[in-house]
Length: 155
Image (cartoon, rainbow, N blue to C red; front, top):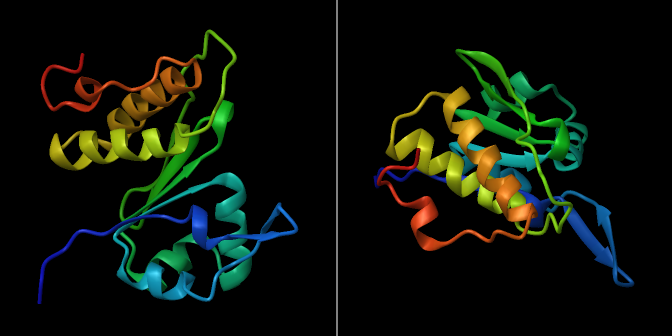
């Protein structure tokens, strides 16, 4: 009866570790997590693992689990957001001026996307662009400061 908005980053649900090596593998908990998610975020490899696991295309998967938006990141290639109504909206990657560590960039992307999209009511295109910009800054080593995700004047 609670009206919750569930955002799922699938990272831990599509990987297994064997002998300290990470392999693509769907968790037994993936279907349950997908059933309660409104927004799902995956990188390209995770997305492909999910599609293979459920043996369907993205639109079929979204309909099966009633997912509102499916966000796919692909590093320097940008990515896309898929909705049932609006279709697929691609976004470019933001320029990274210093090669750095991509650790955490996907998490930063998702947090920035959600804040821009759902708290500030931005379009998918604008929210994706903003999120890509912050993810690029994370890669450059300009780690996100608390006020970077503030709802105040982000321009």
